[in-house]
View 1 (cartoon, rainbow, N blue to C red):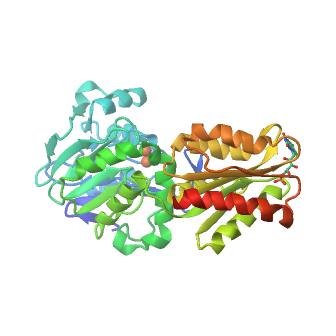
View 2 (cartoon, rainbow, N blue to C red; view 1 turned 180 degrees about the horizontal axis):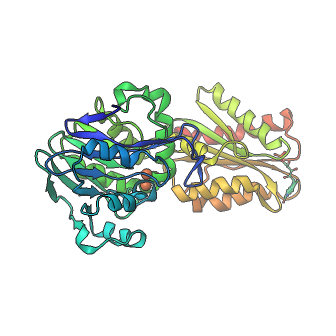
View 3 (cartoon, rainbow, N blue to C red; view 1 turned 180 degrees about the vertical axis):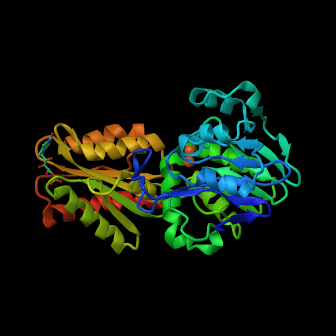
Length: 397
Ligand SMILES: Cc1cc2nc3c(=O)[nH]c(=O)nc-3n(C[C@H](O)[C@H](O)[C@H](O)COP(=O)(O)O)c2cc1C
Ligand SMILES: [Fe+2]
Ligand SMILES: [Fe+2]
């Protein structure tokens, strides 16, 4: 009944969370999120990761049912973040003989959250193996993707990589859990990039190291801790991760603006239309309207970034400052940046954007576009065309 087999002897016991509004009290979840967890039944039984506390009452019952009276011998902790480690305590309360499998860093972090006797911890080093019977698992440390203790677990029999947050994304698994049962492009790709850009992207150089390290391993299937399980085309998701972690941008420009009375917005629209006329894909975001995580997703994807703000109390608009702060936290690379804005007496908005650029790890290309007061067509025409010309030189260069 409702058993989802990933491969012979491997069961999906993850859950969907549609109740949480904000992941980490920050990122909106309009399509929910899944916490994936996997049970391997063999001579020894093993669970890979748990779920977030309170996200599903049936989790432990499902494991019990699938074990058919058998006991749980091991619990692998690939990652200690509470969306996966939340139920470690409850799992161990139910199966007190189960050994927790983790690396030295896992052990340290585990002790800050749970009181686990030393003899219950099975320490693994990079490349160590664990034999369950037919299944032999190996453990590979991928530190800082995206916590220091993160590791991935590989099952030699099925050539499945349990990759933790890597290759994961937002969005529940509504029917089938596999890539070939879902429309990735329509329903998951955007949410996967939003997850990557907002949560993992900052550690892209460590993602590159992890990809390099896993190159020698034959992978039939990728089973992450969020989102789709990749059995048909795991190479596709590896390719996307490679592209995103190398910050290889797609053609296009994101224009993000903050505007109180519409002047800066008119500038944004004017610039957008001019770029559109040159055949460049344009995405315009009002920072006061669209959650910053979606703007970061687009910034990560596209090559050009044009930020606009009205002047506000000798600085930029607070919502634009919020975006700039978020950009500085995730550090997107390889962007062509320009800035613009509207003011009335001292042009503080564009000045403060220029001041913020180094903190975002970026350099402003070309002179900023600034207008005083109303953004009439006549005012924009002359000034904006020079601005766009300069921007295009950098964009194409
Ligand atoms: C609360 C507030 C603070 C402002 N602070 C400044 C400022 O420090 N420097 C300035 O030149 N203009 C300042 N202005 C004027 C606006 O930046 C100016 O009206 C601009 O055209 C507004 O652009 P918008 O229509 O995109 O909101 C301020 C306006 C308001 C309402
Ligand atoms: Fe995580
Ligand atoms: Fe996670």
